[in-house]
Length: 214
Image (cartoon, rainbow, N blue to C red; front, top):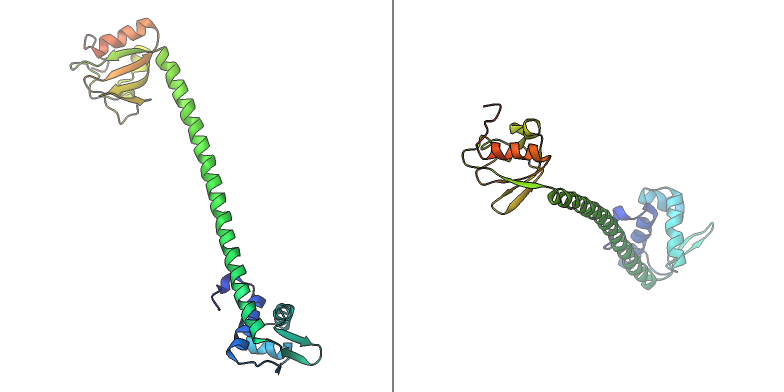
């Protein structure tokens, strides 16, 4: 439809473009009087009101002249051409503006999610740093009964009374270690707890104390 996507236009705008296109192609000639709204409505398969709105668009651009009780007079093929070109340009701009609006909304939503994530990271790092300042390090020995177990499986908080805040392995810290991280010889546990509880964990980690679960 003259380079304009029909689904982005109202029905009367589509009809206006169709009539203008037929004027350009010579279906209707300048000075010719064509049928009234009712006949045009039947020709294009729309309501007379839709045709009225379409003709109003064309009349405003001096493509046609609507004479009440007489019919529609074709005024200018050049005006019809300019109408289509201007309409296409305007519609394309609106499409671009809608796309820009959608992208801006998506960007704003993404920025909000990024801000939220940054705040969570800052909070997490602040909490971790605070824990690290008050924490002690415990090394897991090769013959420790903790080897092969996760912090949760070893029930270190229940058994020793300490909280393991992180595990350091080969220079990398694993904060709040989950069940997927099984302890290995050489792992460094970052723990928080009373001194007596920490010493109990240290003996367990060094293999000098047997784990209650055997």
